[in-house]
Image (cartoon, rainbow, N blue to C red; front, side):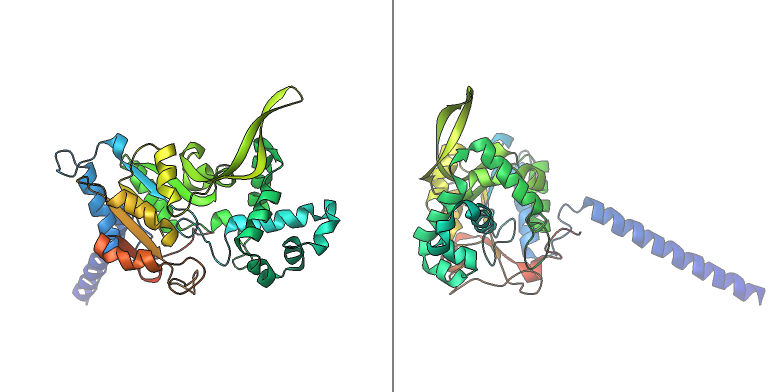
Length: 337
């Protein structure tokens, strides 16, 4: 009987030892995995393989650190862009905040549509109506005043579906990717169709990207003295649209180096991906985020008026761009609360 008990105790001890070893091994793996929110599928393997070959001394694909430039689209690539761009939500809230000083807006489009929540009429106003809203809500103040307005809004605004701050609706796998690249000597830039001065107040805190590494659309500014203080005043005039073919132009003007890695999610990023990957002998990497997860986020791509991914998705295979299936390739979408 005692012998049976001893054998049973030995079996239990061995089982506990194995379990402990497995826990330690799993913990060690979690600590060494730079991309824990990515499933072990082809996109993750492609990222790691690319980083290893461009950072390995003596490799034919080695790229010196000063040339390790990676560019990321923002809307739909780093954070949620559906059902409307976050900057548009900001503009709509600004119209409502400014409305008491503009009683004429009650009968003037596109402001009337915004105040009445008539998104169909607002959409019908087209690009002209949206540009008018942006000019009205983003100009007529100094750059410092605008920075404060953006900071106050981004701190308090909540997404209507997820009930979380917009800065919490960033993609956890992409945050890990940004950190992984920087840990391997990359300089990470945001290249977005969104307003550069809308993004700069918060990107460092949210993405770890300093404001000087943001390329975006802009409105014109001019130097003015105000109460003996030099300021930059924002004018209601478009300066530069950093979208589609404008993205390579913005990269060249503001970064001055051709990236070796580019990450996007729509046809608006097509030319940026071409500019990055079709550039000669240096190893290069292109990736598209495909929104396929209607349950955890949104699902949209072809034949939609929003976030179209026709041209880029068709070109991905021949161009060698990696396509991330959000539903299949990401363990989680947003950071844990």
